[in-house]
Image (cartoon, rainbow, N blue to C red; front, side, top):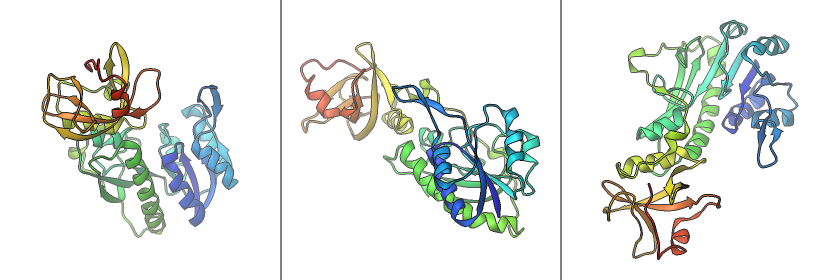
Length: 304
């Protein structure tokens, strides 16, 4: 089984590693090096680094129009596998491999098609999600599904942790289903268009909390924003929230910050007070919420 792999972030690594063991990976297509860290120097994507460790040819097309040349350089191969590649693949390229392009998508399709299925599932308060293995077509995650597997979402689970679990789940499902699909044992099932929902890209505004809303919604924003962090405004500057915990009865007006009897830092919303376990004031490092609060116990202002 000759496979061309398309992927970019850390979440794609479990699938690449699994395919490298069980198939002949002819090469990897990933996104170009991007500036990272304080130095601003271009750094290879995680998939590019792993491909180098595995001794695989690596292609880093800048534009969609460059994908055709990359695919031709890898031919012949049986199938392409895509995991969080980050670029729309044009129809002429989708038609190149005999068995098409197979996508490992981090949701139970047709729910949460699009760029941010993990974050959107958390923001919506979903209790379950999963992985779908689908045959790509010209639409947005609209192709027929080969198979899927579901998992529960932890009440305190952030997007980073959930993405890691889904990446491992998807890799296992991929290597179980792909050989059967190539042999013609599995027939892809069309998606129900009437049930489709869309997971648009997470923007900065999606990470802003609303202090006068429900506590549950605030906690979902904090979880979905990880590892970047949700934020509000404190004394005119951005104040990040990285982890939230217990709920207590509301105390004061929405936005009120207070230290509970046991030392925990709590933020009042419209219906409850939320414990802020980890925060990051402007231009500061991440720190425990109670440690930050102890330094300001006498003059805690409101969060907005």
